[in-house]
Image (tube, rainbow, N blue to C red; front, side):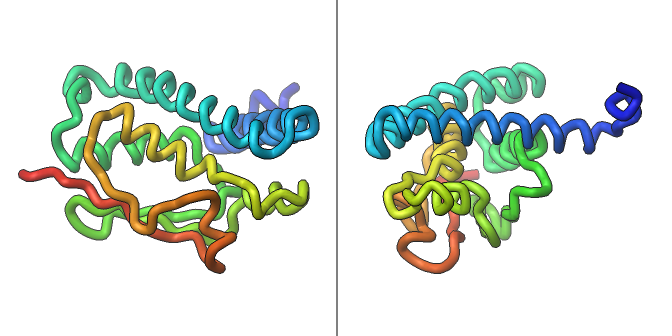
Length: 172
């Protein structure tokens, strides 16, 4: 028990995120066994959509009244940074940046979800839940954006790298 008490904040977060992602993977696996890939993808994406609204609401509440209305790119940057600060762990091999105004860029060097789907033998049918989560955050925030490239399924099935950008339409 002393090992847990002596963990720093980062170690604790890494452990909690790994446990949560393991739960998510086991839920997906058992759902897949019971219901097949099509229904599992559908329910997984719906669950992510529901989660996004709840988790974003909690974070916005912590950020304060200035974030009740998301009307600037800077607020989107703050919220995305805060969300990834909570849910991203070191084992998740992706980077993101804001290379210029109104642009969010992502780059996944090795996708843990895709690797899990390969182990289950369904990577060709998998519909990406990771990028869907980010899109759900943006939908809940009510901001206008365009995904480039458009994602249908998983980009790693279409090409050998997962990267792209989200273009926002803020006029400031």
